[in-house]
Image (tube, rainbow over all chains, first blue to last red; front, side, top):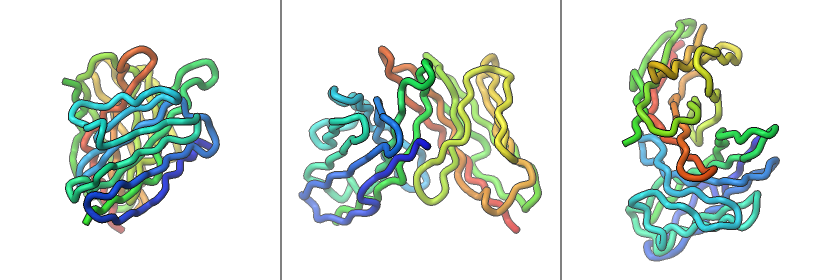
Length: 120
Length: 114
C-alpha cells in the first residue's frame, strides 16, 4: 500500500521551455502532496505543500510563478517548471500523505521515485 | 530556525556489524520523527515515532525516540550489503492549521562492505 508514482522519471529540455511533472498516489487518497528538490549529495529541500483543491503553500525563496503547482484531485498533483534554465536542473521528488487514517491524522509521507530534470 | 542534525555523516562497516545512526533535533511544534532509507531514487519509509521510549522494530532495524533529550537512534543489526544507502531522519512540524511539513537532516551515508 501507499504507492506514489511520478512521471516522467527523466526529462531533458532546452532552456526556456516548460516542463510538467506528474505525481500520483496510486492506492490511497492524498489530501496533501509535497514537492521537494534534491541537489547531489544534499538532503531534500521542501519547495511547496499543496492541499487538494486549494493553492499551494510555497517555502521561502521558492518562486511561485516559476514552479506552478496544481493539486486538482486527491490522487494527482503536478509541478510545472516554467521557462526552465540550467540552474533548475535537479532531482524533483513528490510525496503524498493520506491525512486521515483510522481517525488519526498521519504525517507519514510516501515518496514518489523522483524526476531527474536536465535543462540544456 | 528548525534544525535536524544527523551523525555520523558517513559510516563504513563490514557485513555482520551492528550500526547506530543518530538524529538530534531542535524544532518548534514537533509532531513526529520519521526515518527513511534512500538508495538510488526517492526515500522509502522506515519508521514514524511519536512517543518517547517505545521502540519500533522491523526485522533487523529498530528505532527509538527520546523527546526529553530531543534525539532518536536507528539501529541496524547484522548489516548486509543491501543496507548500504543514505538514511534520512526527518521531523514533522505543524505549519499552520492542520498542515505540517517535514524538515530533513543531511542524512547518514552507510556503506556495508562484504
